[in-house]
Image (tube, rainbow, N blue to C red; front, side, top):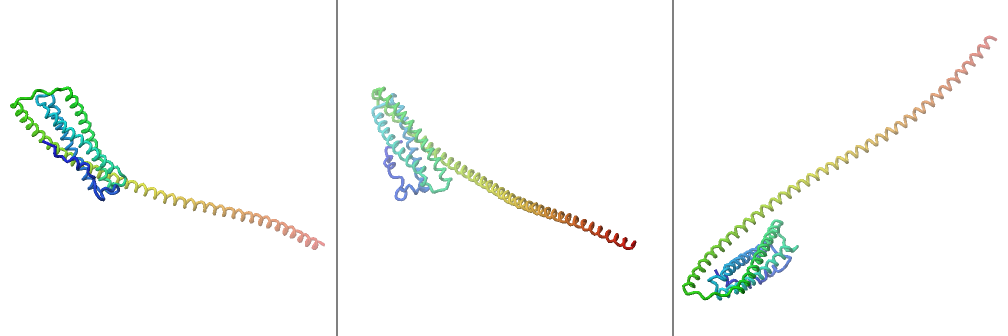
Length: 286
């Protein structure tokens, strides 16, 4: 399978045009488009690296020719150019995802975009590191391994046949890999949707709990207010009782004074009566 016709310049085009270039406006559909484009380019990037690995392993074998090495060098250049393009694409995607004002969708969509962006960045980093490592191995092996003598025509035909078979198998593997990748993406999407729904349910439960706590505090506030009113009533009753007690004490004092005065006048009247009787007795006796 050949990737010579891949349009690498398409990676350098602006991700969004017109209103899409405004960092303050990026819809979830536009992000989905960018994410899908990045995912497809990563798939092609991985396929190119697999092709590079297959051809690199032929260095030093009977299939090793100058034409093979030239093909590997050209393929290396294509992969390096795509590496730079995907790096810029992921950098732009990360900038859009992390921008404070770029996402106006719901929290569930924002979380899904962040998770997918992290997965794409991690996948790209792993592929780039693997390619750089393989490139170093290839350059070292190319430097230390001399070209073998040109094989015979029969050997060349056999080699071409084997290459055709290997290419066919590689194409089948690439198709299967793409199908598996699509299934994985769909599974991850469903998982994150379910996870978001579960989090929303938990948030609703927490909100209900907070409302119940607020209701309890409101009831406690009313109860404290009622208790305060009762305390005020008791205080008023105590003050009134104190006033009544003081008034009763005053009345008792008045009664006591009156009683003392009454006893005093009784004694005076009794003495006066005795004197009067004594005078009468004296008159009678005389």
